[in-house]
Structure formats: structure tokens, C-alpha cells
Length: 485
View 1 (cartoon, rainbow, N blue to C red):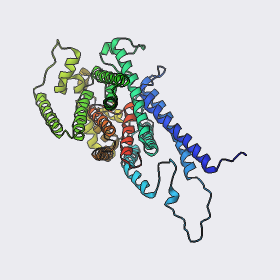
View 2 (view 1 turned 90 degrees about the horizontal axis):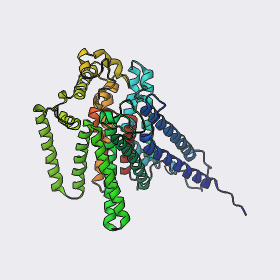
View 3 (view 1 turned 135 degrees about the vertical axis):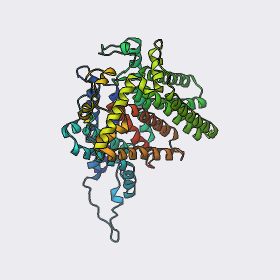
View 4 (view 1 turned 180 degrees about the vertical axis):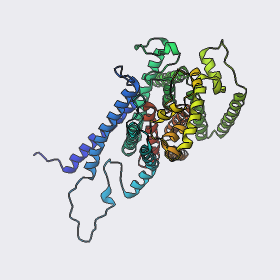
């Protein structure tokens, strides 16, 4: 006798399928968006990665929408026994949609509320934009318009509402590990002169690798996000090796150590000073908190004191800067220029941009000028002597400082909402770390975010780095939620 499959069982099978498709989608985003580029586009890195990311997010949204419809769709009305009444709270129970009881709904919304505020204010800034069309769609060379930010937000929501367990998070970390392996190997090939593409500004001429990210500074910021993840795998491997000292664990540990070394070496080869500073602070952030978690409070306090001393010393030498000499290597001169931005060409360019940005912010402080419109206003401040530090008639489209750029595109309201978002992520993340819940994973993600945000004080968001930025925030908030086991 052939038994008919019940409607509930059929829905359950479809839900399982949709869950798998959604997870495959976000794994593809983490693994392939940073390494995908096309030579047929004028802006081969930006357009390619933007297109792939938006396509995958929209496909995942389609599956998620079907899942929600199936979860909250019409159901067969059951006849209740006499004396029993319908319970509206129990009827809100969902199978995998990420929402359970009313209490859980409120708890989840509370976590993502800062992200909602930021996206709404960024959207309001378009109303006052000189070019709403450009603010919405983004410039061809950057593709960081409001539409892109909506995709980042959608990606954030997808992860937050659909991540169910630590196994899924571990698969995400493995996808990041795969992506970092490809990026690092290609970057080292550029350094060794084995690049298969004849770039306009090859690494062999600039002495700075850019790999699949497309620009040395962006690569440096991206590496800051993945180095703590590689460290996470190293700590896990060492823990397994202590329990089972076999050949397999030795090989795995050696491979991870090698990858970590090559990642840091690649960071050096980017010659991105902002990324170097970010790595410095990320290292101390990770080390101090890790030692606190290991009950090594004295070590943590000593590291904190050392950090303060180094910061004070750095401020001191900025008034007595180390001047690059003609005989210095390019790497040495880059390091010495850290002590005084004015002696560096690119440092002077950033100072010029910061001055212009501050003046523009004073004129429209509330909601700014709208996304992707900085170039319309920077050109009005162009000075002839700027040609001494960069190519003639080169106009900035960014302030090269994350907070200043946020003020420019969305004003004080945008910056406050942005800081509220970041602050809430670090608050919940650190709070959960000291509650002995997913300590190492949270520490790795927070360290990556911290170093990245420091580097952004000399740079700005691009698609591959912003993907991980929003992804990390979603995972951190989800890890502290009680539903993730």
C-alpha cells in the first residue's frame, strides 16, 4: 500500500531543501566574492565582485521568501475541544524561519535595530543628494550606492535569521579560509613575478601586491579581517594536537602556521600603512582579551601598559619624525613615513582630503550630501599645488577616513547610527565572551572587525571588505543569541 505523504512532512522536506540552498548561497558569497574578477570589464574587480554578490544575495532572498511563505502560509484549521481556546503565541511557532515566540521576535529585533536605523538614515540622505540616481545606484568605479548597502543589509538579515548552529558558522569560517588561501597565493605570485595578467600597474613595478582584491590598501584591510580567522583555526588545531598527537594533526597544524605566516607576509607586501596600524591594534586587542580569558591577568595588564607606551612613543616621534633617506628601501621609507604623514606624498594627499571633508561637513552637517557624491564637491576645492603630490587634475571621491566619509554621505545622524551599530556589536560580543560562550570564535571575529575599522581611518569600504564586515556583525550577534547552540 502506498501511503500519501502528509502536507506537514512535505513542507518539512521543502524547508530542509530551502535551508540548504540558503546556506550554499552564503557560503558561495564568503568563498568566491573576494576572489572573483573579470578582465572584460573596465573596472574588473569592482564590477565583477559587485555583480556576483548582488546576484547571490537576490537568489538567497528568493529562497528565503519562499521559506517564509511556507512557514506563515495558510494552515488547516483544527477543531478545538470544548473548553480550550486558541493560543496566539503558540501559533507563531516557526520551522526554521528564525522567528519563534513573541519574546524571541522582540529579542531578535532588538539585536538588529541599530542596523535598521543606519540603513533608514542612509536612505533619507538620498533625498538631499545632488544626484539621487547616482546615490542610489552608485558610481561605476566604486558601486557603493544605496542599492549596494541594501544588499549588505539583506545579507546581514539572511545570516542573522537563518544561522542555526555552530556547525554552520564553522563552515563559513572554512569558506573564508579557502578564500584567503586563493588570495594569498595569487598575491605571492604577483610578488614573485608570476602574474598571468598584464596589469596597467603591476606589482613588479609598484612593489605592492593587490591580488584579487584589486588595490593594495583594500587587500591590506581585507587581510585584517581574515588573519584572526586563520589564527582561530591554528588555536583549534593546537587544542586537537594536545588531545591526539598524531601525524595528521601535525600536518594540519604546520599548514595552518604556514598560511598564517604567508598572510602576515602578504600584509607587509601590500605596504599599506593603514593596514599595518590596523594589524598592530588588532594584535593587541586579541592578545589582551585572550590572556584575560586564559586567567593570565598579569600578562594582559602588561600588554595594555605596553600598548599605551607604544602609542605615547608614536605621538612623540611624530614631533621628531624619522626622515626617509635616499638609500632607504621602499619598504623602509614607507615605515618611516608612519611617523609623520606630512613627509609622505600619500599622507599629504589624505591630509588635504580631510581638510576639505571637514569644511564640507560644516556646510551640511545633519544628513550630508548623499552616498557616492563626494567627487561632486571635492573638485570645487582643488588647489594647483596638489599636482605636486598626485597626478594633475586628479579629484578625490573619498575622504579616505571612514568617519569623515560617513559624515559626508549621511551627516551627523548617519555617523551616530553607524557608531551605534558598531558599538552594539562590540557590546554584545564582548559581553558574551566573558560569559564563556563561543569565546574564541567571537574573539577572532571582533579582532578582525577592530583591526579593519582602524585601517578604515585611512581608507574606506569596498565590496569584498564590506561583505565580511556585515557578515561578521551578523555572526557575532547571532552567536550571543540563545537560539544558536
